[in-house]
Structure formats: structure tokens, C-alpha cells
Image 1 (cartoon, rainbow, N blue to C red):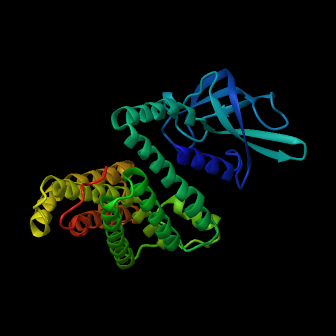
Image 2 (image 1 turned 90 degrees about the vertical axis):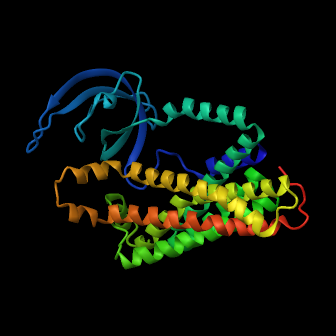
Image 3 (image 1 turned 60 degrees about the vertical axis):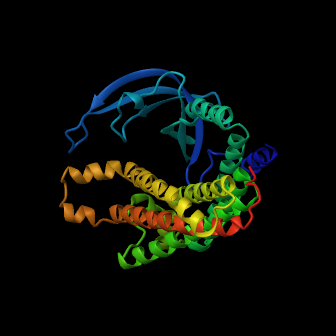
Length: 365
């Protein structure tokens, strides 16, 4: 628990105000009144676009308490969930021209709505897993802290995306395995197996990205990042880093599960060692591989579902769509991560069998 609190304090202290950015000033406010709700049809579009006119009271800056009348919805087609209600908090951009100030609504403040879900998650972890659940929360906080406090600043500073991500992943692996599962032979086997699986993902991902002629500029976000950093970040290597990070959780899960299964089998039967133990543990891993590879693929496809649906509408030839960087990058991530998962099983099993020794000590929990 102390580790979790320290990480939270470090994370908060290292971050500036969340309304500060590198471009326009952003302030928060809340809606005090809905003045008008209407709909219009933009030029060249046959799709009606609803909008609202609302009054917003500022909550920050020297002009705190001032009420401004603004329009919301001009940049997007809103469904009912996108309409503002009295009391909703919003983020506003501030543009200054001498003494004149112009405000525009940028986004709805949504994070507080996640607090009940997060609270239920924490409660479920503590009730079901007890101390293991608390350790899982500490491992999660540590993993997030490693990326936010180490990897992201390194990338912003111009470091090689691949090198920074590799060291970040190694830190996450060590923290997530040892914090959650303790310092023992089982955890050490899982650590070695995870590193081996991540090495496979990195090698296969690098090979596929190079042979597929990927630039790392397949989406608007990637293009904006490249332009915003004046080309300091190697986008192709950043794409490979994203593949590594996306597969890391599944590989850790596979390695820990396989090391744990091997340790339990060795503890139940003191005579089961060597090839017998390896074969029995490998049978457990085979079942785990099928379900986890399927889970990994569905997670990637779930994230790309809007893009896949757009392709299915046939606005452009299927051959062109399927060869786009976004689709190919997702396929590379799925295949590289799946290969890392598959090879992680025999490697982790072999390491765990070696650590079992003869005769084995009782597996520590």
C-alpha cells in the first residue's frame, strides 16, 4: 500500500495542470443554462448537424465566475449523449486579441464519470483476490508510472522510441511480476519467459514492419505527432514500440500462468521432474495459448472496428483499404504478439522446470 501511495504522489507531483498545453490556453467551466437547441445542414453535406447554444460559467483564470454564451456542436454531428445539460463541466479554449477574449467549447469533462467504475473494480479486486488484489493494484500503478514518468518523457526529449520502450517494458515486467507475485523461483521463471516472448515480438515486429514498407504515418494522430515534433521522433520505430507495449500484458499473463502451473505440478508430485514435468505443464499451456491468442486478436480488432466497418462500406476498393498502413499495422501487431505468446509457453515451461530442481522446495505463495 505504501508503494502505491508513493507512486501516486510522484505521478501527481511530476504532472503540470491538466488544462495546460503547448498551444492555446484551456480553462474549465460548467453549463448554467441551455439557451437554444437546433439543427442545420452544412454546405455540401446531406446530414443534419444538431447544435446547442449554452451559457457557461468559467471556473478558472482571472475571469473566474464570468458567464459566456457559446455554441456547441458545430464541429461534429452529435447524438443525444453529446448534448450538454445544465451542470455539465466543459473545457474551453481561450484566444486573446489585445483585450478581447474569445472562448470555444473543446470537450466535455468525462473522467469523473469513471470514478464509480474504478471504485467497483478496486472493491471487486480486494474482495475476490484480497492481498493479491492489492498487489495487482500496486503493479498496475507501477506500470503506468513507469511509462508516464520514464518512457513518455524520454520520447518527448528525442530519445530513440525503441530503446526507451524496451527499457520501459523491462521495468514494467520486473515490477508487475515481482510486486504482484512476490520474489520467488516462480516469478523469476515468469520474468525470464516474458523477456524471451517480448524479444520474439520485437524481432518479428521489426522484420514485418521493414518488409511491409511501413512509415509509421498511417493515422492522423501519427502525422500530427510527426509534424508537432518537427520529425524528432522516428515514427516507424514508434510503431514497433506500440506493438511491443500492446503485447506486453498478454505475454506477462501467459508467462506467469505457465510458471505457476509448472510450480504447482512440481509441488503436488515430488517425483515429477524433467521431461514428465515439462510435458504435463506444456499440456496446460497449450489450452491457454488458444484462448489468449483469440483474446488478443479480438482486442486489436475491437479497437479497429470503426475502420473495419468503414472498409466494408466500400467507399474505396477493398485492395486499397486492406493495404493501408492502419490495417497492416494491426495485422502485424496481432501476428507478432501471437507468435510471442506461442513461443513464450515452451520457453517459460523449460525455465520453470529447470528452477524446480530435485528435490523441489515447497512453492512459495
